[in-house]
Image (cartoon, rainbow, N blue to C red; front, side, top):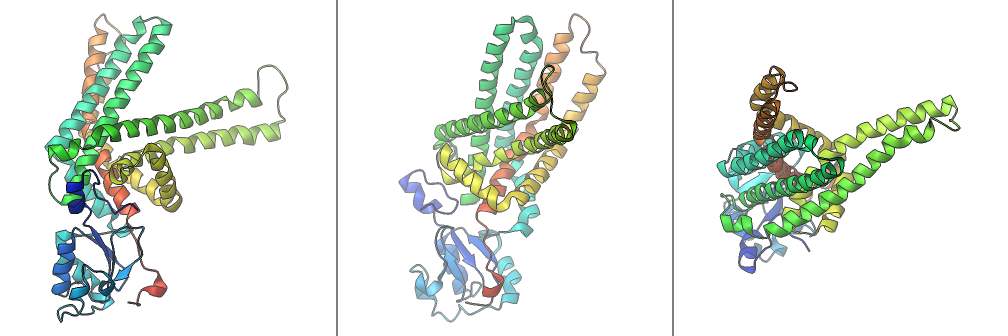
Length: 380
């Protein structure tokens, strides 16, 4: 049984990090507490009513306080009284930083919190390093590859792609791990906490992306070769009433394939939060899509839009400079290409950092939100 988001790395750390609770108030709103101590404190002060329900993870059933050994001794306390459903806003406000409100209505707030979390010197430094490597890779591709033979270009492209994949996955894993520890412990992550299991998570993320990328690229190749099958230069051609809708359909399918790439950002938080293998990550990812596909697409679109907005002040000057410098002419055109490629990679720093951080928030928000049904809202 997997617990709610918490690191499960070493026995000494498990107890502290797995001490989260989900508390469902009488009106059906779900909040997440950071520890048993926090829940007991607010039960004593009457902020959590006796008819609230609790559980540790999404795989457990809701239980009343008197059926939970951690809180059974407090259910008879005079300070723990039933709170009407209309008081849930006051209750949530009183709980403050020790609880997180979960649900769609908290998405914009979560994305803004993710933005605040992104503005961390360590995360920005890691994202800048990844952006620098990406820029250098693009510079090598533009300046060195044209001088190589055809066969060596393919070898070089393969090696460069693997290098960029390793760097991107490592940066994603490090930033994601830092963010998750911050959410789990409500404090900045320490170096040993970030390093714990980092190699395995990076490797699993690489394998996941390679498998997904292979499937995606195969589908794209099939879609793009459809016209050659349906309307070959030589041989029989389908009748126009059949050919036209098929050709139009393959374009529609390709348009839908591209946004699917944005969904791969969720693999990293799944692997980090759940600490699972890449096959289990695929299973959890697919279950999440089946349940929240429309919201995930909206959330990723908002996150990417905000990330692009963050890097626009840095990327636009590079693009303007490139457009007025005649990169295709002159003996030293490679200097311009290489320099601007590196600057463009560095300009992606805010986008990379924010997307990596925001997807941890998005995953936790989607995976661990639960609401009482309308018919059960007023039941204890």
